[in-house]
Image (cartoon, rainbow, N blue to C red; front, top):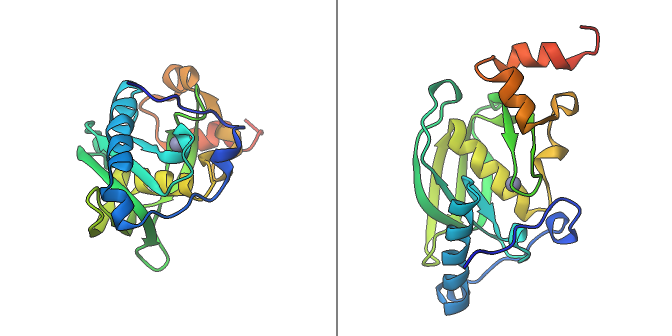
Length: 191
Ligand code: ZN
């Protein structure tokens, strides 16, 4: 069974979601929700799905990435669950990376979004046990994107607005181009 993914403009996407207790995480309803979110994410397909995206105001997200893309520091991440996550940027100041990013709740569009290259996340796992994740590159981007969802934030709040593009145009114009070059071409309106 697949869950319906809600789109931008749906109030639940803009509210801070509520925490879960370890006992709730272990309980039948949340275990069922995790299974359905996994299926829904894989079907979409996506590399992350946060509970507010399927209309549940809970601090829970599922993540899985099977893609390798060296220039984006992207490598496969096995399926896992984060509950009540807290994210901390590493580095002082943190090293930021710019890449096109999309969202299953902003269907058909992408934009360049700056994200911290290295983060540490403290969370509970699918059994309600505490975990610490040290992530970098694309995985760090996914974590920041999903945790934003739990706080009512979408990537469009963080994007460089002038890079907002249809996904089709990203494929047509910008595949293989460096983010800096794209920013120059779209960024200042002078070109
Ligand atoms: Zn999203």
